[in-house]
Length: 59
Image (tube, rainbow, N blue to C red; front, side):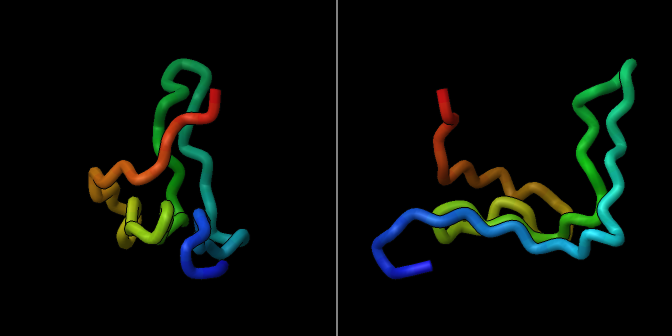
């Protein structure tokens, strides 16, 4: 991580991540991922999406 560069950071404990998606409902968010930082902006704060979209989709 370096000033002026793009970076995404995901903080989690691999022993506590749970995939909540199912075959019938594949868009469920996982639990156990408390923080996600996208280009320096907090996208997930204490497992809650902040609504800030700081990145872009990869085609």
